[in-house]
Amino acid sequence: ETGVTQTPRHLVMGMTNKKSLKCEQHLGHNAMYWYKQSAKKPLELMFVYNFKEQTENNSVPSRFSPECPNSSHLFLHLHTLQPEDSALYLCASSPGTGGWTGELFFGEGSRLTVL
Amino acid sequence: GENVEQHPSTLSVQEGDSAVIKCTYSDSASNYFPWYKQELGKGPQLIIDIRSNVGEKKDQRIAVTLNKTAKHFSLHITETQPEDSAVYFCAASNNFGNEKLTFGTGTRLTIIP
Figure 1: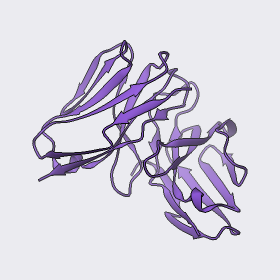
Figure 2 (figure 1 turned 45 degrees about the horizontal axis):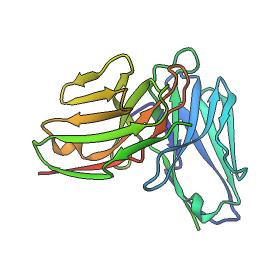
Figure 3 (figure 1 turned 120 degrees about the vertical axis):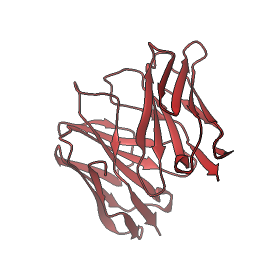
Figure 4 (figure 1 turned 90 degrees about the vertical axis):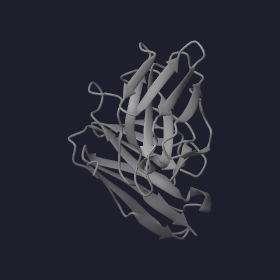
């Protein structure tokens, strides 16, 4: 148990659906991240939030829309996705700017399949 | 930006033997190099890291070495055990305090009993 919980663990959606991924951390951290993990590719950083403010958007298509209502919760809203968006989406947290130790704490991921 | 290459992509070793995974990075300003282990169905978890002011770090059966001149670093696992089977990722960061890591493509390590 890493202290970072992601739901749902598995999601299948059509290209016209709208769904959301949820991440919650119980570590008292102030930074949260979304990563995309595809087979045989490096983990791709998508978004970073520090103290609820978005500090990084790594040229992610607008069909992915993040939301960070507070330092403990992070959402990834999905709409009009493409089959190539099928992947494992990982949420992570860290202490935040000023407290960065180098370690990211990952959740177990949400496996997304787009039909 | 930073680019991290990792080799090999798959590695099988006999239980009890050693395993070595190598990474190279492109940004000479990188100064923090962690290694993450991802077991089946789990998220990656930090197992060891090294900063640019040291050349080697050990933690029981695992060790990491860093060659800043050549811009490469390696993970060494000795006396491998079945529970070492997992995917291992190296990563690099160009500024301690900058919460961005660039990851390698991963190495699937299989320990043969």
